[in-house]
Figure 1 (cartoon, helix red, strand yellow):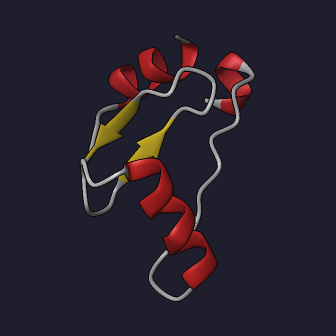
Figure 2: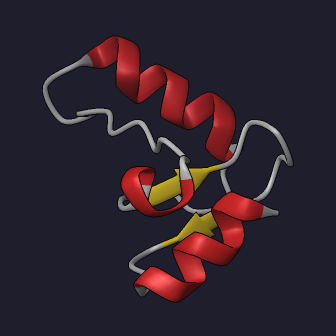
Length: 62
């Protein structure tokens, strides 16, 4: 997606990194409770669970 649309999606490891896990819980606010979890800081929208490329692209470009 970065090459195609110029949008960078950060990937954070939450199993072994407590700081990243805490950040995920803050963004999640109890809605998803697991991974994968995608959060768009610009829009405040999230995706819980797996998603195909087109859904992720739409979410990222909103």
